[in-house]
Image (cartoon, one colour):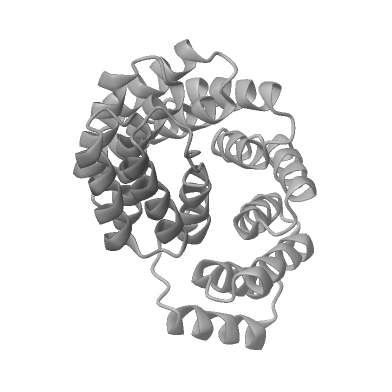
Length: 268
């Protein structure tokens, strides 16, 4: 499943929305630098935001939130090692913060260090047993290790904790599909779409499931919706082309294959 980079950036920016009041225990100048970093980060001026959070840390070396947010901005920049270093420092200062463990795990995950990622997600869950996002994240790491049963259990737990967690339904649908249970996969993808009608990748995923069942019209409809939501989805064009080809609509298939190639489609 492809990553939606813009969604990930928005999620990280959401983490940065916490502004520290001027009455906080930290020195006033450190708080001002910190809040300046938050404001700058929201505008995606990454390097300037790093400088502001660094200034906050210089003025208050135990400013846990400044380490966390600088870690988030390093993550946005793709510098996962520096992000991990900042989250590690924050954990040293506040070992019982579940969110920081989860965030460090996310950076290990992005580096491909799945065992450390799972360890951090697990610690986050121990600290906050109702942390749906940590279960979902651990599920993703387990799936990447091909531990499908554990991934399924984590996605299901995330859904139990947050019945409106669209991403967890999508991710569980992928596991059902991998296991060959196409009807349950389609049910989870449909629930995802009900919760988030603009989740382009889920239309693609459901289209694949319908195509595997031989329901080509529904598959084509889903690929078409995925393309409407994400016109640069080369895979959706390719798969729709295959579905058209299977229906004997050669000209439409050729048009889609040409567009997929133009967008840089490469078989997975």
